[in-house]
Image 1: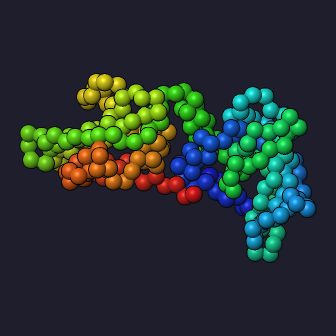
Image 2: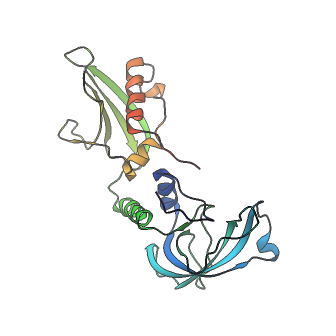
Image 3: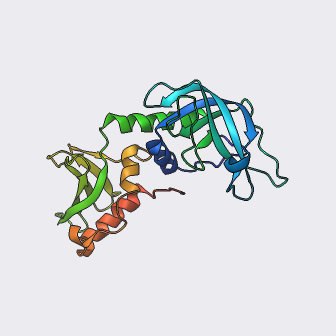
Length: 250
């Protein structure tokens, strides 16, 4: 997913990138001007195999920010060292940084251990797409599955289950699971009060909607939503299996 770069804790899945993008108030592309070793209290509590550096970087592009930023930012980074204790060469390196809101003087903090990444266009585009989708307000934030029902079809092995999802904005959202003999299971979402094939759309992988479904819905259908029905609970598990694993690595 990303170009190899020594010294960085890589984001290894779409979910990793989504999680970090959605929690970061500031995301910038920047060029590292210099790094110096942190001293005193600023260097306390560093894990073995790492050295805390003060990173000074010049902002070259702002992907996400609540307002204007200083052109030069500074943060602490616990850089991994190699087997000989050497630090990665970073001067002039193009990076993508996920940051807290900086002070007027440009002091800020990385959001997490993996918040400093070597810049590459694929990662940049993925972050922009996620941030844009989140800002649009068109992708529902899913809270729980509130109810479900299953209807058998006219031929053996044919069925349709519908699961009603509760969202943060209280707008209707229904997960539809269709099983037909000889066909791949269809998993779709319908937004609004009309629930039929024309109103439903397949869930596309590696999208914000996909992330909010596979990473936050329960693996098992709760009893209060119909989980006591083995067939309905099986369709729920099958639907999540069809969407694929979340893939978040922490």
